[in-house]
Amino acid sequence: MSEQEDNKAVFLRWIEAYNDRDTQAEADARAPGYIAHAPGGVGDLDSEAWLQFIASFTEAFPDIRLTVEDVLSVGDMLAARLTFRGTHRGEFQGIPPTGKEVAFSSIEINRMVDGKVEEHWFELDLLGLMQQLGALPEPEQSEEASPTYYVGYSSNLVEEEFSEGRTRAADRRSVRRVMSSSCSQSSPTKE
Image (cartoon, rainbow, N blue to C red; front, top):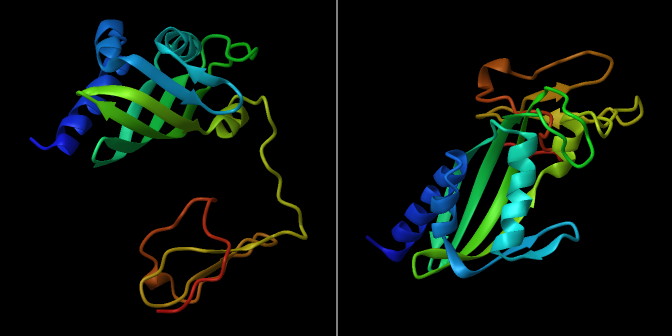
């Protein structure tokens, strides 16, 4: 097995240990000098601080599960895209339980040393999570800003215009997939 395959296997075991709430296996995946670089002014977290950080999620979302969507491993570095899913049943960042099911994403980069996670950088979609919990308002769309969204197409441009509830398409047969509200708002080029 290559170094990249070994690193991927360690990472996947680490995520599975978290999902199983196996604190020993989760700790075993981390190197003795483990450091997590947390966003948003939280700063660097050693193993003890990391356990407190992840406990805030498992206490607030007891059924939270991580799904690994993509993994890329090069040398001693591993990047992953994950989705978190759970139900808000405990206090989170001062927000009382809502009972809402949530899903939010994370991008993670890990430096692997001797088959363990030595350093961990991550970015969580906390804005999306807070909106789902009702702590922040959903973005509103003004009449003036009603953008034109372009969706995936095969050979013909398909234009979906979301203004005044009207939808028109140049050629619906060419649509291969419809993207969510995070579609590109820039004009695509024709094939």
